[in-house]
Length: 114
Length: 113
Image: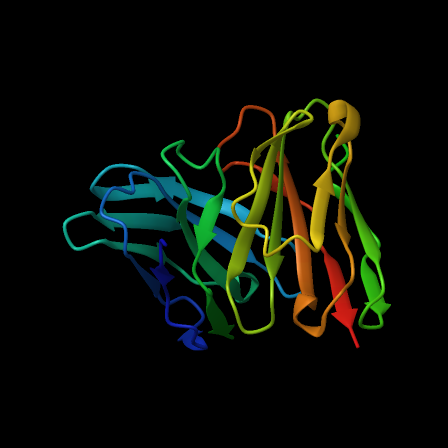
């Protein structure tokens, strides 16, 4: 049974600062990692995926992966109030890179304070 | 392009009753997934269809849950008889080629009283 652990928060960050969200996972063979954003009452939306150790940047978002430590993080630079949401970390259920479904963490509730 | 549509958006039923949730995926998407989030818990995978075939139903909680996707278009998830612990938000998602870039529906909030 795969497990994905996240601090549920809330994590409060002032506007313009860097928000750092962390996630650990139990299955060493996981090769793909995903970050979803979910606004209150809305559906999850994929914002980042990462497959290799190191950093992957997309606009204000940077995903960081350390497979040896089984740790993946999401950094949000220049945080905006519109970034306030729950951020979900996910790994594939099976070897299919996510095609077989995902195991999610409980999510971290991020609040950006104006 | 229309998104993934789920209905009803909310359902309140009594314990022991039957409820059927429906999901209309994005047109042309062969892969359809059902997930559930119970309050205070993480989103849990229930099952995966490829067209009309069940690819993986390992996440289905028990035999009170029945999912179908006749014709490979829309899907239904029936809960019969419903129990209190079935309360939660049921999400459907679809993708064309499989993989995590799938689109979620807005969910059905089920409350069993």
